[in-house]
Length: 58
Image 1: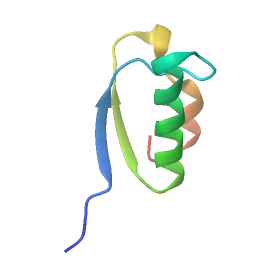
Image 2: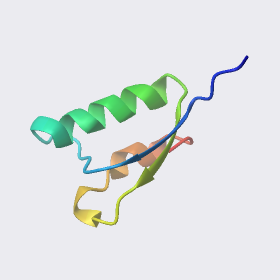
Image 3: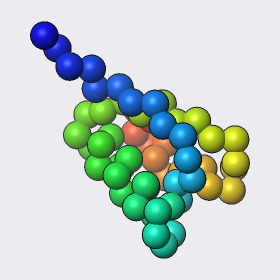
């Protein structure tokens, strides 16, 4: 049985930000580096993690 490695997430994510917003970035980046596919949904462009666009699976 193969386990899916695709995740949908929503929330505020921004690099070099404090608390939850910054830790969300670190978690998503680590998951992308480990081969997960991330479908990110957030309408607030202020917190969009543009740095993660370098990953094909984001």
